[in-house]
Length: 113
Image 1: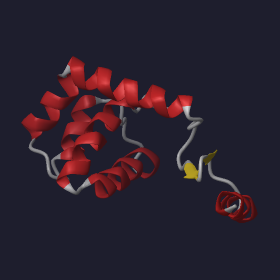
Image 2: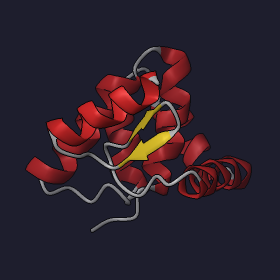
Image 3: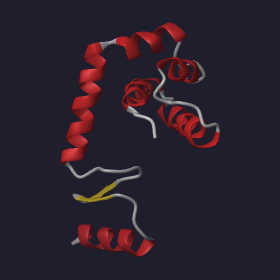
């Protein structure tokens, strides 16, 4: 398992570029299919160049202590809300890490009430 905080730093910035989903998919593919080390900043910067970043932009984001602090703050806030895995759903305030179709349907029904 690799630490993903640096990947999340790039994902935060990819949202404004409209490439967050594609970058997320590329990171998962790199990790789970290609066996690449997605905690390595050089690997991350290289992947990011295919998703709206220049190599210099990606490297600058990954080297910025303020970016790291903000990303860690957001991760801590998510954990405080109950997020422990991906995917996690927040259905009307019910936070679920995945779940069966029946569990998700029950959460949706409860949220409608």
